Structure formats: C-alpha cells, structure tokens
Length: 375
Ligand SMILES: [Zn+2]
Image (cartoon, rainbow, N blue to C red):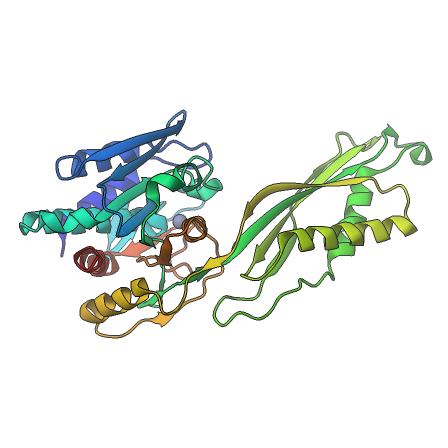
C-alpha cells in the first residue's frame, strides 16, 4: 500500500474547495508545499481566493487538474472530509478530482526521488480553479499559459475498473428563458398576464424539439434538459409578472449553437401565434463547445503504450456524457486527452459518499509518470 499517496489524498480532500462559493487557496497551499522545491512555479490569481498554479515550463505535455469540488451536500454515510475504509478513499472530490491531483504529485516526487528530475523539463503541470462552475477563473482565464503541444486533463476515464481514454468531450450550452407578464390581484386574473403559466407553456412547447446532429462514433447523442431550475411568483394572491427557467443542452462536435438558439426562438414565436401574451427572452448563461482530437494523435499512441505497460491491456475509447476543461485546451490548439482515475458511473462523483479506490490512484501514479517519461 502506498502510504504517502493515501496520506496526501486525504490531506487534499480535507482542504475545503467547494465551488460555489469557490476558494482554492487551501488546496493550492498543500500543492505548493509539495512541489515548489522541484519546479519553478507561477501563481495566477484570477479573483478573490481564486488561484491557479503552474509548475514547470515544458511545452511538450501539459497536465491540467482542477482543485475545486462541487459542494458537499447532504446524506453522507462516510466522512465527506476524507475517510479510508477497505481500499476506498471517501470524501468530496475523491473521484472528481483530488485523487488524480495526488497521483500526479506523487508521480512527480517519485521521478525526482529516482534521480530523473530532468524528465520533468518537457512538461508543465497546471492546477486550476473553477472547473465545477464554468472555468471562468480557471482554465479559460489562463489558456495562453497552458498552451502546449499535447495535454492531459485528469478527469475520470475509468469504467468498472477498466481504464479508457477520452479523445473528445461533449460541449454544453446553458440557457435561461425569461417570461415577462403583468402583475395583478389574483382575484381578478384577467387584468394581468401570468408569467409562470406562459413559461410553463414555453417549456412544454419545447419538449418535442429535436436537436439536429450527425451521430458521433463514440460521443453519446446530444441531450436537452428543460427546466433544470425554475423560479417565479412572489405571493399566492398575486399574478406573477416574472418567471425564469434554465435549460442544459449538451452538444457534440459538428453542432451549431446559433442554430439551436434560433430553433428555440422560432418554436416560442410559433407559440405566440396561439397565445400572444407570451413575452420572452433567451439568455445565454454559459457556452462550452464540444471538441475532439484526431484518433491518430501522438498523445493517444503514448497513452496507449503507457496504459499497456501499467495495466497490461490497450485501452478502449470512452465517450463520456460530461463536458470539461479539455474542450478549451483542444480549441486553443493543444491536442488534449482526458485520462484520469475517476469512474463517473460508479464513484458517486458529485453525489453522497463519493470515493475512489487507492488501487486506481496507485495505477495512475505509474501512468502519469510514464507519460512524463515519454513526453
Ligand atoms: Zn472534474
């Protein structure tokens, strides 16, 4: 059992970095104290308590891992600040992705301990902020600092203890639909316009909308989740003059966000032909395009070779449902692969009792170490 790997993972999980509110300073302090003696580093502050750390100056291979986590939430049976039981490390961020951070840190330390410090020269190691809330204070803000030939984003690529590689990620398009009405006393509803009811009509009207796309060889089909949040109305006896709902659309490469937006707009306009009191606005909250690298990329060859050496098999290709920082790096010209110890189906990432197995983290110490060696 790798004691130092276990200790470091528990230490990083214990350091709070829930986002929202967003504060990476505790985690950043731990990472700085571990790596500052081995590599030059740069600290890029992008907001109050929003910290990005970049170690090393190599441009051949850039590692990217996020330090923030989603909020802890309720209902845990294990300690959300870190607990080790029967091979599993529990805690918020264990799988997504504090475990991966500690695998990378230990792999760097092992390389130094083996007297191979020169191997680190070809790499850059970025520990970033804000991935869980859109990356505005993280990867998106520091893209030029983390541009390299190849990249690894350490999001999970394991399923049922089998390691995969993810050469592409879906994109996301987050929208807010606002419905405007006219307030009135609800004992006399005819004198007002009910924004909530109009919003309900809009959402139901969009239910049958089909997204236009060409099936992708490995990414899952695009999805549209309507009304993921909904808000409106102030008082039981007042006709509401305002209501809003969010829509979470996940796209694949080849789709055009503007086309999606105009399709939504046209559909709502058609509803207006039946109900002319509908008064709406569509706001774009966040937009991250889908992106992929060529299956013949060198980084895929290197990853396959290393995984073969460590795990004894050639990894298959996984098309995860989520989107992540890899898309920003790919679109910025860095051929980036998603490769990490997390298993998003089985680890309860973002849920209660999130965990990762120590065995997987041990494997990824070797995998990340191998990638550094072949960079
Ligand atoms: Zn993540």
